[in-house]
Length: 446
Image 1 (tube, helix red, strand yellow):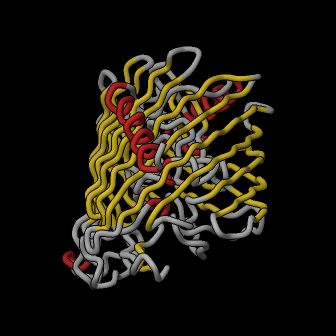
Image 2 (cartoon, rainbow, N blue to C red):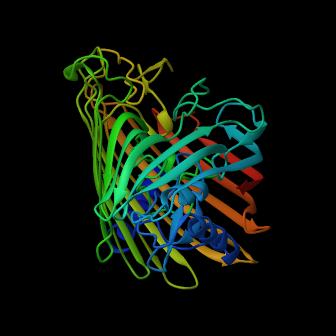
């Protein structure tokens, strides 16, 4: 079997459940973890009507019970934030957070293996404050301030592809209103396909964006980032159907006139009925803030999952047109032989080389399964991506297989481990997606 044939089978296999199964939001954890999430939401107030995002960028998922009784994937701390009901009748201020520490072995093709103490493999390591104030008639003022940091050295973490930042609240920071009519918030918020924060809708995956870049969605999908200067609105859920819209007036900054700020637009929907869950979203990054004119990036993402009882099957698919980077923020090569690179960074607003104005078109897909095992939960995932840089015809592709296992020590603490292997070709050859990784660790929340 050739490499091209193997990649084609990977993508083809993942396309089927993306259309027939449903979006990333069914239970694969133990009752202990579920109880923790349920406790978090119940302490805020009763009558949960608001659905949180499945997971955060490059992090794993915790699992909690949705308002309809079936299970949904949510970042553990995010579940406590987002499950402030839209018909809140109490006022409260809550301190929340999650800590994650592990040891990771990583080997990239052509490079030496590294072993490091890492933070944030399954949960984000972060802390924050959330608040709700009842203002009558089922309406409430809400806010969230959240800071991510590295547990091994205390250093703060900035954006998806930056290393550190001195910013006070570099994750979510928003203020808004909610009620029977929905939720409206303003501030810094994760894009719909980011895997970050309350408004993420990224699903169709057992591992999500957790454990390791090799073997998860970040290694094949084009993920949107944190959106500064953003406005987000989410409806109440009607018979399993819910809509979300987001707009950023300036992904990095909105101090210039409108035509010179980079904007983000997102529109998505979820439909959940019984054991079937699904999501679909369409996003645009217009790159108007770049000094070089760059074609708009268009992103269509779909996910699905179905809980068969003894196991849950997941599928996800994404098509990206005029992508400004390859998966996991790998930059475009100047040419195939030099190894040098450049990029138009959608989240930072950086300028691109004049030779790269059309970006890349790519197709990516994932298929995965999760099942209870020995008191914990086992997850297996297969991913594939194939793309072409439109300006010079350079091609790239990658496939990977990932595994993860979580075991609850208590309602709030779990042990985790994972192994992943991937091969990358052409423009991605020798990148961080070409090799293997293994990680073990522990995570807890408060």
